[in-house]
Image 1 (cartoon, rainbow, N blue to C red):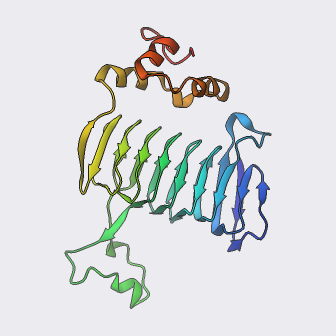
Image 2: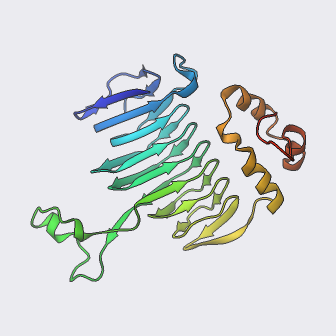
Length: 253
């Protein structure tokens, strides 16, 4: 595990790779402790984490192969943001205060905001009046929408999506553009709308069960490269040809 600990504000002046992290000149850090888990490719820069025109602040853990473009990730207090390997995000915004956001491997995320806090409408004003007028930090002034957001593996989140706190999105799910996710999303379901509603399943119940059992998102790099070469094969043919459908699954390609 490599740790890039930046205790002061920093705007990178040079582009390049630092301990398997590619950073471009428009990326900024603000008291950020960035952990880059390299797993089984320690000593290799084949899959560096790429931080492009993004801002990171706080406790953030990004596994190898991740690409963040124009993203804004912030934590405070006990907050934590964890991105598993090969997460590709463009314009992802997260502010995690005393909360955890976990995003699984092989997720594709377009412009998305994950909102973990809100305003208390039972008070005289919904404005954070103590914070901004009295310069006091009153935790009761902030209404938390949930302590955790979990996005599973291989999830595709469309443009202009909002995900509220406390939501869990299952593996293989698809979120349509412009959606507001207020409740849990089942694995391999397609949701869209404001508030988002169930549209349809990606595959049959049997096929979804088989894919879930393979846990292909945990494969090592050699297995993943073999899987990628055959990924355009129709799903049922792929499963029949490359996995043991009955008995032990996930070990044969």
